[in-house]
Image 1 (tube, rainbow, N blue to C red):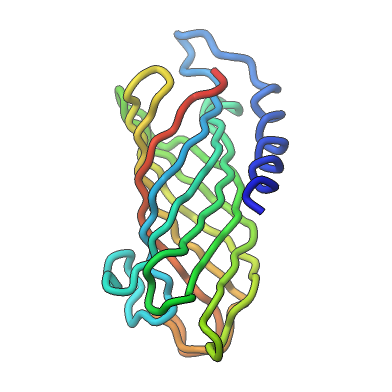
Image 2: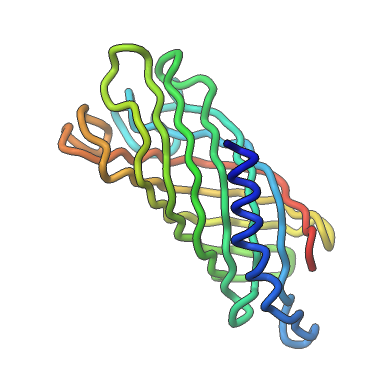
Length: 200
């Protein structure tokens, strides 16, 4: 599954970088493509009474998030991102995991020296697995706004922090931190990791 996601992500994102010409230094940073990995901690919005990314600390899900992102291929500001998030550790119960496979545009908001702030709007699918007898397991359509803060360590190496708010609108069956059982699940959380520029 992960290998298939990576191949599809590269096939989708790589052509976008090919259509971009590197900009002269006086005009901006030019198109780049990065591959990275993050450690993630998420409020699963299942078994938690509140929905902030740190309010359910005793039941947070932990996991890893490999991703591919392109930057500045359109108007020197718009790029694209694809990610696979595997939240398979800890959580409110043994056997409760969340995974998501999302892609979409990334927009540069602010850049100052080594720092860069970007927003993103991703869509795709998400999967919830639950212990036997629990309600709501399955695969769902998901969309996720988020924000990334990058710190350029070297020309090709970058440190990144990330906040993402996922929305699974078709989820139904139990009351969550943001619903009363009428539908919707909103996992959200924080990630930190590193990325490497494999195309500049």
